[in-house]
Image 1 (cartoon, rainbow, N blue to C red):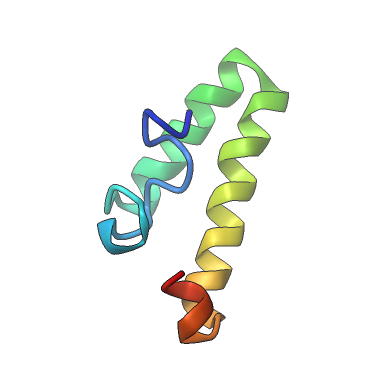
Image 2 (cartoon, helix red, strand yellow; image 1 turned 90 degrees about the vertical axis):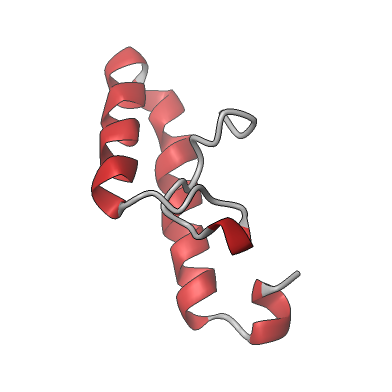
Length: 64
């Protein structure tokens, strides 16, 4: 999923995402969940944690 860009696709390309909208990211998550709910947690938690770090993390941590 990582190689396909399905984990945290809403992050900007600067931080390793695709720059997709949050709506697009949720559609990706829902499609993964329709195939396997447990696999969708990878996408969901990746997005949630990445957004918290990017929005509230110290600059040195975010840029590493």
